Length: 267
Image 1: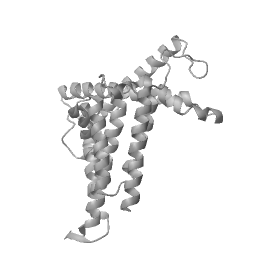
Image 2 (image 1 turned 90 degrees about the vertical axis):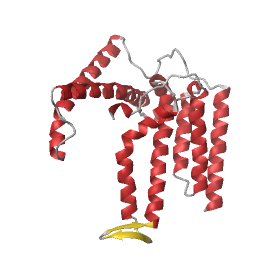
Image 3 (image 1 turned 135 degrees about the horizontal axis):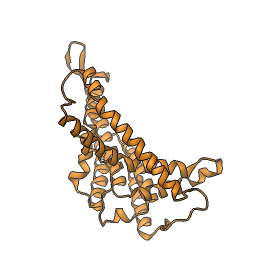
Image 4 (image 1 turned 180 degrees about the vertical axis):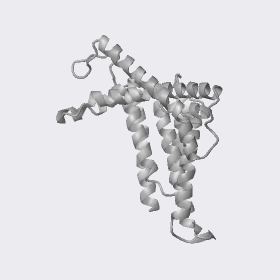
């Protein structure tokens, strides 16, 4: 389960999406995520599905690797679906005591499940095709206008980049610690909720110690290299828009226009 989480991981490949400017991918992902919440019909979700499948194909990231990240949200997905089915008022289709399943609940549960899956896959496409350094540079450039109101844009972008980079490292560390504790007789599966929480202590303590040690080593390494960041810092590979980025923006605008048209026609 730990290794199934793909957030923060980068998958190297030679594709058009990998070569796009990170700002283009940021805005494209944001546009797609917003569009998912605008659809309320089968046709709308069909358009979003075609767009998402096309992006996965262009990225050259294996489909199995892309969908592996969904295993980490199965429990959240099930809870969301169940709550929407039994708590949404409407036409009752089935009743068992105080529990009732409504037609409107089934429709809403289906929409929420699709939206949650598309949110995870859409975000994963961006992180899997963009290195942490490019994510930092792209986010910093997009948020640069906020510098005028004294928002620490560079520091925010750097913290997000470091957090994304540390996710796969900490997941791997968690997997190693868990295997070592199981070899020593620890049990993370059996028992009630309180017992399981107590059994997690031998896992969490060394994990936190390892995380603080890594953070301290990183801070000392950055300080030893006289890292200051912010204004005046040069970049080895400055971000420059290319022709492919213009084509990507054109495809995004076309998709968003189609989204708005479908919404207006079918409302």
